[in-house]
Image 1 (cartoon, helix red, strand yellow):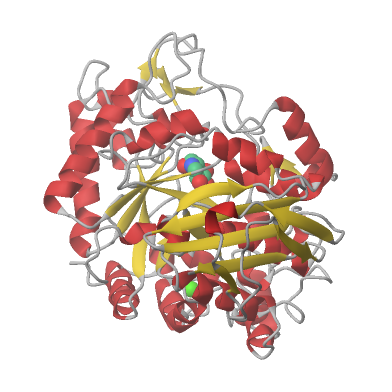
Image 2: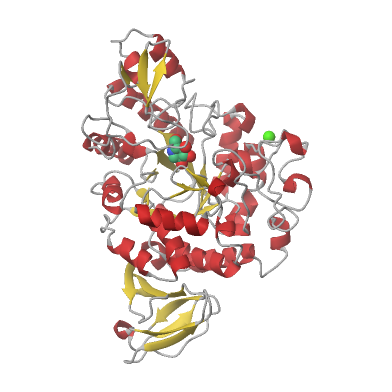
Length: 547
Ligand code: NOJ
Ligand code: CA
């Protein structure tokens, strides 16, 4: 059973830290991060102030897609440890009040999964063959786009053993499961139960829009998919109350919102479109991209929550922007074509910000104060760099940099043995960017991040509050309130690299005193005239509007 508290809406107040077991800490010196290593760093995660950890897939896998190609849903990849190690980790996390979110990759398996092996060897009309989606031609479902467009030219791949094509939305080594077969749904529910029985607090539903295929559609967001989600949710509500489903649906707001159903599908879902717009607003020094996308975002059910992020383990996806904006983002943030992959940018936050800490802090200001539960990607709290010369998305998945020693303190192995090389770029290498150095400096990014998280944790309005844009008369400055119960937070953020002055319309708060949240200093009382503030380059304020 989960032991980390009993507030069933915990995901609304959560701050999630995303990491990969393989990348965090190597406990046995073989060059690969593992559960023992991760456990040894839980104090660090706890001290950051986050409330939950999301782990990328750690199951047995040929690792053609870094573990999103699962060969056994119930086990732990031996290089990360044993199931017992996982359970020990879970206990240790819970003991620290940290919840644990794992991956339920529901759309596809590895081609090495026994289900696929059985399917390809079974007769064409059998229920076993029917675990996957087969065809004699490549003409079916031609309305579906290709997602890994730098790597695949078709969503169909030929299987010589079955003598038929099978359907795959990602790599051809990841055949899609066939949800039209009731046995598949049963098997997925059994997998879900396995992990929930062990005590995990939440499951991220990978690639959830693609569960069904129907001719004449783009094979995304189909009603049948939502029906399955309702069944999974009902099952959780009945058997595992307090656990959470986090849907990964990289979709426009109106389609993404559908993943909450009527509060009877996913508890939480990623808000993909807001992410690239944070970067656009910053480089254009204009609030409109953020304001526009949030205006287009429909309200969500009371028990639901967005999950927001700046970066993650994938490319910074530009699927949810127009063609023109995509080109703008590439031209601005990925001038070197090697930094581009599929429809995105394979870079980390700090390099995207040219290592300008005021910009990094401003982006984190949005992450921690816009509506939704923030997800921090490991290493970004110390401003880690990337390496886009590495294949696929590996350049943003390099070892965590703990100190200036060999392998950045990640592993005692021969450096050549590491699963990926430590960042060696002069600006971001381990001597400069590491946890130990930043722990010793109260003005480091790490210290600032802890502080910002601590401040956020003092106000439920950040996780649960309403969102209202405040007119500032200056497009370079984005101002908004977040109100919950009788508490209102005012955020004022300068997107420009020049100092700016604003006259805020705070008429709804006449008589209240803005108290700046980092220093607890009271600012002048709000009167019935516009509230004037000056902000330095990329500066922001969080105020508690008191009284
Ligand atoms: C989304 C995951 O975030 C990504 O890393 C993976 O490659 C695809 N889903 C396929 O599982
Ligand atoms: Ca290891």
